[in-house]
Picture 1 (cartoon, rainbow over the protein chains, first blue to last red):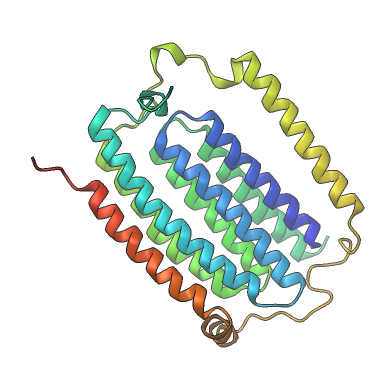
Picture 2: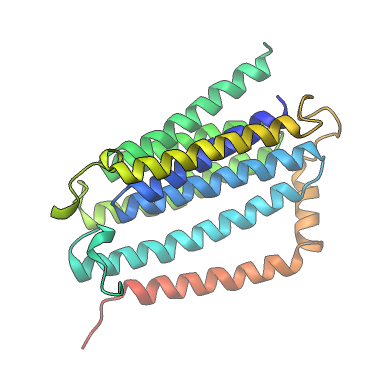
Length: 99
Length: 175
């Protein structure tokens, strides 16, 4: 398979994730869509690393995974805090900072 | 069509189908499970790209740890259904402005992607044609602990901050 196949797949996955972030009205699904986007980027990194025969793509993938883990932990803690505050997971319910 | 291409399309189909299910499911529990299926597809793609360690880490860390965290939170909060507010009952795809702008952006993105791919040389050959694969875990570890030492150490600080932050944020206030 050529790298173009992997890049198109990565772009498709990233678009699905972005569409999920914009369309869904549930904080947990929003975080899941962010995970999809991070994984699409990971796939592109690994494909490029394979194409150029270096190990750097795989290593950057590990860093992205670490960031994703940290983001999931903090994001879910925020979701729990918000749910305790408003009894809702709808982002439209948290508009106190909106002008 | 070789077996490599067949496997690529199977795993890619699993990944895309899982991602689509994540976005379209109403129940967050099903979303999380579909995302785990999507990660298994991606893990197969990493094996095809001769990165077995990334594939294993994808299963263990992502599907095993992060998704279990998500699943625990979903069950802890116990809100299976999407609670759309009164003023926002309409499905997003039925709102005309969102469809117009989003559709235009999607077409633009697809056109640019096709244009870029058609203009870039060297995409025709297989991904494994030019260079031999570096898939040994020993080499991975050597580079990680020499060239990427600083980034590795900074990552440990990030993990500590995230851990403490999560505990502080999720703790009940006592007043």
